[in-house]
Length: 151
Image 1: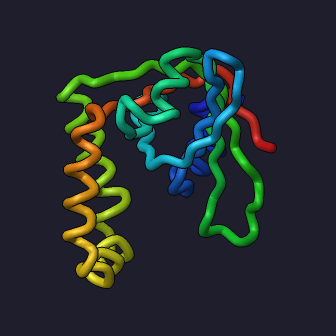
Image 2: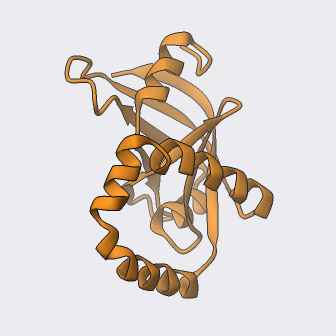
Image 3: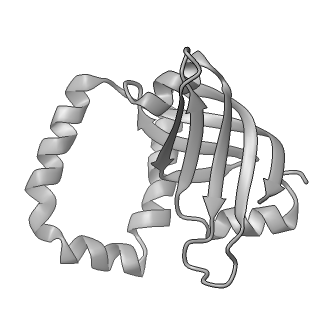
């Protein structure tokens, strides 16, 4: 199966979280859940350059990404995509990613409801973002799919 297969495309559109499986330089595995967008046949995962996912993907470009349709109680399959990752810090790509993430996760009725229900957490989020900015810079893990399969 290829990533442009209609069944795979539909499944990716229904998924809300991507779980990236990486290996460290020493071969130690790690799985991290991240927000994602699917752009022109590639998977874009947002994170910071200091995170384990970014460091591992930079050290070993072979990765796997797992998707599940969280909201579908009937379809319990998992879509696994294996591919090569690269780390991108391009500001134009980061803006594009952030806009797409906003429309996918935040600027939806459930996203707005959730933001309003947790409005009291805004000071905590601002503090967290300030501390995060001191550690490193935002980046995108761009994955070019090579193998696609349902498990």
